[in-house]
Structure formats: C-alpha cells, structure tokens
Length: 519
Image (cartoon, rainbow, N blue to C red):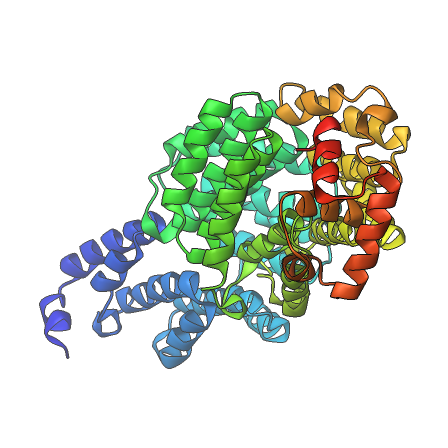
C-alpha cells in the first residue's frame, strides 16, 4: 500500500478526504481534487469505489477517454451495487461524449439491472438515457426518460433534467420552450447552489445567455447575469466564462451601451483560454468597430486575428472555437477574397463530425445557417450573385423561422446590399427592430431609398471592392492576391469599372468615390 494510502487507512480520514475531493470536483477545482484522490484505489471499501468514481468524472471532464481508461483500469474494484451502478452510468456518460453510442447503450442496459426501487438511480438512469437520445438526435422532451430524470426531488437533479430538456427543445427548434426551461433551471440555482456541479451550470448558463442575445430576451439575460455573478469561476471552466462574457458584451452592444460592451470585450480577450478563443475575441472587436463605422479599428483587430490564426492547428481545436473560421471568412469577404475563401474552406474541411456532440450547435440548423451566411458574403464579393443569394436566403429563412432576429437581420441586410431589393431592407429593419438601440438598427433606419444605398450603380460587389482598393493605391499584384484573379482578368475588370463610372484614371476614380462618400 502507498504511503498516502497507509496514512488514510482510517474511515474518518478517508471520509474527510473524499468529501473534500467531491466538493472540489463540484466547484471545478480539478487539480486539487485529483491530488486528494491520487491513491484512492487503496482506500477501504466503499470509499475506494466512491473515490474512483469522482476521479474518473474529473478526468472525463478534461478528456472523456481519460475517464474511460481510469474506469476500465479499476473495473474490478466496483463490487457494491451502488459502486457498480456508478461505474456503468459514468462509463455511459463518457461513451456518449466520444460518440460510442453502442457502448453507451450496453452500459445503460447493465445499469438497468441495478436500479431496483432506488429513486436517485431511477432518475439518473432516465437522465443518461435521455442524454443518449439527445446525442443521437431523437428529441422527445416529454418522453418517459425525461420524466424519470426529473423524478428526483434533489435541486441539482432537477436543474440537470431541465437543462437537458431545454436542449431537446432546441433540437426541435422550439427556442421559447428552451428559454423557459433554462430560466426555471436557474431559478433553482438561485435558491440552492450547495450541491450544484459548476461545470454543468456554466455550460447551461452559456446556452441561456447565447439564446437571450440571439432572440433579444431581456428577461432571460437578467436571469443569466445574476447567475454569472453567483458562480465562483475557476481556470477549469475558463472557456465557459469566456463565452459567457462574450454574450454579455454582445447584449450590451445591442442595448446601445458601447462603453460597457467594449469593457466586456476587453475582459473576454483577457479571459480567452486558448489562441483560438483569443482569435474570436479580436473578431468580436472587429465586428463592433465595423458596425460603428470605425474601419481603422476593425482592420487592426482583424489583422491581429489573422496573425494569431496562422499559429493555430485548427485540426486540434474542437467545438465552438472553430466558428472563428467562419467569422474570419465573413470579415475578409469585403477586402481579401483569397483569405475569405481559405477560411471558409478550412472550416468546411474539418467536417460536421468534428463538432463536440455535447454542444447544441452540433444538433440543429443554426451551425449550417452560420456557414451559409459567411459563404454568401464571400460569394457576393466574388460576383457569384446566384450562389450568394441561395446561401443568404437559406440563412435568412432559418434564422427568421427560429426567431434569431439579429442573425436574420444581418442576412436580410446582406441580401439588400446584393440585390438592392427594398423588400430585403424592410425585412432587415423588421428583424433588427428587436434590437432598436443597437448601432446596426440605427444604420438600417437611415437607409430610406434604394438610390441612397446604391453606392456604385451597375457594378458587381467584387467590382465595387476592386474600385475601392484601386483608388487606395493597390497595384495589380496586390489585387490579384486579394481577389484571387489573374492580372488579365483584373485589367478587364478595371476597364469595366472605369467605363461604368465615366472615369479614365485612378485619380479620377478616387475623386468619384469621394463624391459618392465611399472614401
């Protein structure tokens, strides 16, 4: 027996260490918990079983495979019904996270034999079965599994069940029901936080805040802000804190409070736990600058995001970090075609299966709509009007149907820019009206006539961008790099631009663009 195991051979010592480790794991202080549990396999029964389960749970939060390896290594230690049930349930949980659904089903079938009439086990089995259904996209928020998951009166069990049911509703695109369940869950959190697992809470909080931002739900945002302040954040959940602060910042921006938004975005950059998230922080700031018509600031932030992204092995990233690639594609679509195409292609090459299956974005049309919107912006600048319209209309339809008003407004505004069809401007205004204090809404409100928006009549979006770059001093080599076109093609495009605008030189082009308030 190890020295630590010898020192902790008495029940009182082991019980104290187990309770402390369990509390540290619950509070997302994982290194401290693992340190206490280092030799828990040597503890007397049943403390050894409980310690091994806590340790495997902590490891699985970092990497599901680590948790499974730990459980498999000590599988013979789980001799009691309670220990064996915990082993099977935790194995099923980890199998779902690595998408081994057959393994999860086998573990849950074995766990069924140990349930008996033990209410917490009944509820936990129901929860894990419902989670497996959700992971395999079989959404039944009113099904027997969810009912069983909610049967345990323990506040955290109730919270966990409500959160899972909310993701079921999200899979069905019933976001109002999702919001109701998330708010109900966080009312429980506000009343009793003592036994709540903070990792689970933080994941659910990000879902609540993100949904509140997308739909303009101020009540949901108030509930989320209160929960954010109540959480004791740790480095082990820094990625979730980062995403929550991002959502709070965007809400402040939509509410017309740019000072608070900038402060929060600055905080998010400091909190970014990985280089990929730091890229996202720069992207956020670039978006805000662009919407405030501060092109210099937007260009600076975008340049920093681009420089950092080159240091990242995107194949090694996971989950929502990868959305940064889509957003980079969108931001570059107005200035650098080669970069825009590269980022969108890079994201597409990673594939849908690369998304973390525990994320809501892996389970519904929102992720596809995000990609279609970015692809539409790229195609618009390239002059591929038909492809751009198809992508942007798909994005608009999805966002409008699920009442993600801000995203729908962006897509409609892009379609108006592309087609100069007043109907799209009216749709953009209607959707942005849910964020009436935002700079974006004010900008849309100022566009009263198609003629006022028609900056360079008769030119394609790509030709418009070429004309601006040309007037700013770009030579043919630089234009070729930016727009992924040969020198010959660009020379022809410049002839078309000069003819359409009635100019014969760069100097005259620059004067014309200034008159049209484009420079």
